[in-house]
Amino acid sequence: MLANQFRHAPHFVRGLGIRLVTLMLVVLFSISKTASADGVTDASKAPNAALLHERVLRVPGDSERPVALQMTLYTPPGEGPFPLAVMNHGSNGKVPADQQERYRFSFSAYYFLSRGYAVALPMMRGYAGSGGHIERHGCDDLATGELAARDIRGVIDYLRQQPYIDGSRIVVAGQSFGGWNTLSLGQFGVPGVKGLVSFAGGMKASDCKDPDKALVDAAGALGKRVRLPSIWFFGDNDSVFATPLWHAMFESYAAGGSPAELVVYGKFGTDSHNVLGSGDGLRLWVPKLDAFLARIGLPNAPVFPEYLPQPPPPPSHYAAIDDLQALPYFGEAQRPYYQQFLKEPVPRAIAIGLRGAGRAAGGFDPIAQALENCAKTTPGCRLYAVNNDVVWTRQTPVPVPSHFAELTNKDAVPFLNAQGRIGYERFLQMGRPRAFAIAPDGGWDAASMGMDPAAYALKACNAKHPGCRLYAVDGDVVWQQ
Image (cartoon, rainbow, N blue to C red; front, side, top):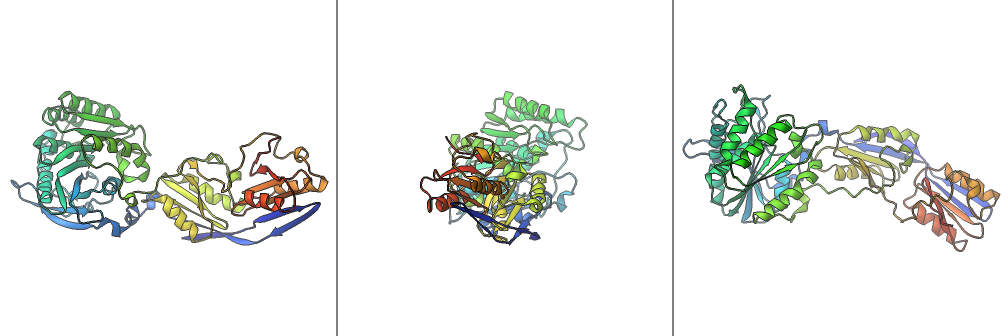
């Protein structure tokens, strides 16, 4: 979406002996953005829809309590047979079960697709388009999880019969209530299931007076029944399960003898319970899950990286994230656009080009979206910042700051005569990116706002003067005596 347009002027200054030539081109500077994370549409939370090969099926649940369950199935490219990942959803207590939307937008699903798995996302009975309803068992969390797990077992039994599924390589995962149901499945020894993955897993029954104690007790009982390896992910600002509770739950479960690993990743955003709802969470759990899958003999390396957002470049340390003076191509009128970027929640990205910029926050891949938004307004778009780090790099490597002199000290610049120092004063008024080169014979050249001012200044200077070297770039003196 195009926003306000601003006037912006790139500068190029050449020092030809004692002559000063200035060229100013007036262009439009445009900015573009997407909605913030709070306003992200569902469609923007997923990779390209064509990549998902999505099918919505009705499949049988527990054979002893017949019911048809609604299930979303994603498959990677090819005909298979694919290893299988079953991903179980949580419950939104603020929305009636039958009115909750089909579970489909989860970075865990995209992760498994990237590793070559078919991904099944079944809805619990009574939820979305599934038949039946969940039975209430008061404080008996063990019974609640067991009945839900019987439906998951029914889904796996169905999928194992499909020619595109490799029934000997299965991992079962779940989030929140789905994580508890995943752990509960482990007691049945379902053929082909190699491991269990719980993201902030647990449950709290509304008709139980002490749900925390009930959960810890049930976890201890379950740990005595399950012998499949499991990995648990929890953060320290979980809005549903407080840190002391999930620690006690895990310890109770592990004390029962079940092989389990706990991954604690501290605080995440405003609520670590939603770590699967943001691409920024991938860095916290993907390496650990890769290692877990490797230990249990399941695929764990990316074979289809297009299913995950592109990773951010490393910080460049070009400038502090809040240094408005360092922004390339931005004038005073455009800086509020960047300040708004700083207010966006992570994940977020901003790209900057010669005559415009684009930003994005939330969604599947804010980096790609920011670059796309920027490209709508200007050529030469490159990432400037991702999340809380500046990643901008100069196209031509330049020497590190030398602290030879203060940037604003024109009298410290070697070789220059009086008119050359006037040229340097004008360089100091230029916008970034900018560069100033000098030669032993007193020649100099400066460039600003182009694609590669450092390369331009050196090339222009060397065309007329031997031995040109950079004196200053952007906000630093880089000259070495």
